Length: 311
Image (tube, rainbow, N blue to C red; front, top):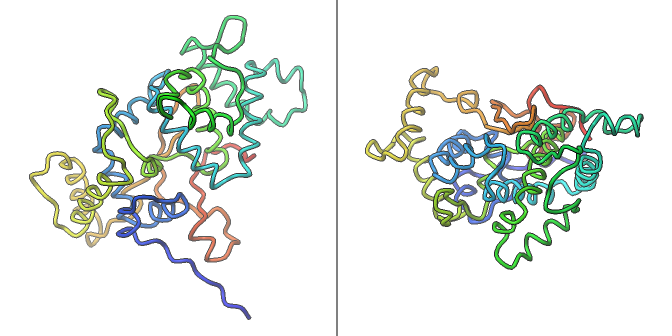
C-alpha cells in the first residue's frame, strides 16, 4: 500500500522573511502558527495598514485601497482559476440588472436568486455613494470589463497600476465590493493577512511609497515578532508598545503562559448591508474533512458561520 505523503507546514521563521510569498504557503502559516498570528497583529502598526483598515469604512475607497484589494484578487484568482468565470458572470449581471427585483421579474428562474444579499448591498452602497442614478442605472467611468481585461489595463497603465485606479475609482469601488463578497461566499474570504502578499504599501496621507511588505519592513516586523515570542520584547519601542502590552496581557491570563489561536483571531472582510465590515475567526477549519492529511495542511475554509451558499 502506497504511503500518504504529509506536506510540511512552511517554517514561519523562513517564510515570513522571504521576498516573495505565495498564498498557498501563507495560509497554513497564519492559521496554524502563533508567530503567523502575531505577524498579523504586528503589521497593524504600519501607517499604511492602519489607513487601509480605516478606509474600508468609507462609502468611496481611496484608490490605494482599491489597488490593494484588486491586487489581492489577482493573486487569489491565480490560486482559484476556475472561479474567474463565475466572478465575471456575477459582475456582468449586477451591472446589467442593477435592480434585483427587475432581474427576478425578467429571469424568474435565474441562479442568481441566491445572491440577493449582494444586489441589496450594492444598491444601498450605490445610493449612499451617489453612484446609483435616479433611473436605476450605475454611474461609472466604464461598462463591464472582464477580469483579464482589467488586469491588462491595470498592468499596462502609462502611469502605474496603482494610479490606474485613480482614473477608474468609481468602477474600482464597485469591483472591489463584488470581489470581497465573492471571495467570502466562495468560503475563501479576503483577510488582513493578504496584505503580506502586496509588493508595497503606501501611506495615504502622503502617497509616498514606503518599503514593501515583502522586503525590509516584513523582515523588521518578524524580527520584532520573534523577540516578543521568545520573551525578549523591547520596552522602549513606542511603535510596538500596544501589541507588546496586548501580548503580555494575553500571556498573563493564559493557562501556563500558553497562547492559543483563539487569543489572536484573524481579521476577515465581508460586504453586507452596503458596507465592508471586518469579522474575526479564531480557528480556520479544513475545507474538506475527507481529504488526505496532505490536503488538510494546504486547504482551509476561511469563512464564518454566516457564509452564503457557494458558487
